[in-house]
Length: 138
Ligand SMILES: [Zn+2]
Image 1: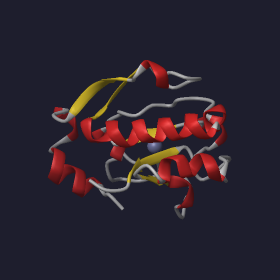
Image 2: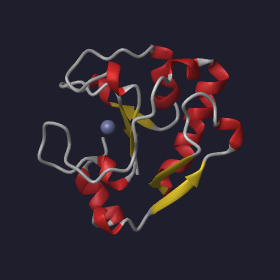
Image 3: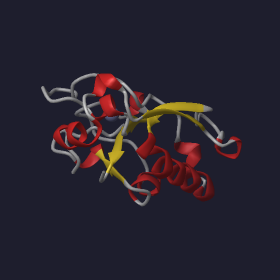
Image 4: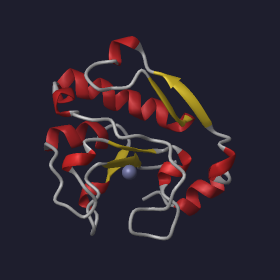
């Protein structure tokens, strides 16, 4: 699993935002609540585009109820280390139904759209973070 240390090594301090881009999401992917633009790490663009395409082609995009953000310089929920959101390589979705430490409420097929596109899912962690997907490697 990618750690804050890995990110610091590859991208430098999060506040410098050296590897961030404003991704203009292709119009054909702007379905449901998928945003038109996402400020994220350049390394997130391709995996996230793959995940969005999978969500759409499998119809799982109907389960995407809310987009709850990507870039956010902060610590991990319930932890002291820096969240991978600080480097823009993690996203949150359907936060209202997938609160930190709560049993996740996402269909398996939905989760697979991300895990098959290069993401780890927080829903399987000891303290589940069901809303959270992050790059599985840098
Ligand atoms: Zn998150």
